[in-house]
Length: 106
Image (cartoon, rainbow, N blue to C red; front, side):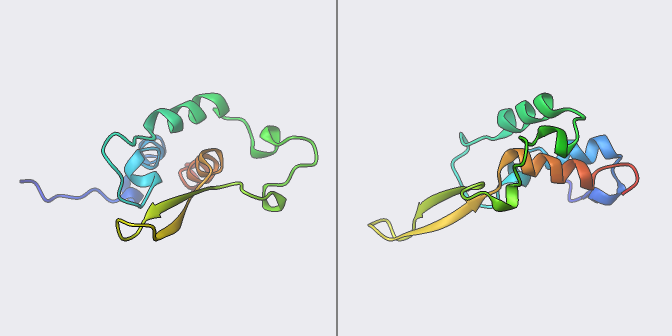
């Protein structure tokens, strides 16, 4: 078993971005293996590409002023009727944040 870890800060920008665009980095809740967000995140990456954040917004729209921008999931808490809400980041906003963090200058 290899216990070596690679630090994200030591990765080149493109490799770091690809690291963040994996299901295990996007979500921090335990879900079945078949819940993969890789294809969703890759779709967002292809759709947006190098467009700026402002180019992707509709005229006059500001995400901080919108309700229900992120996804709220209800997870079963005790196997019966108790649930707890969990928020998942909007994949488009997550991509913009990841891309910004992984820029060469940063």
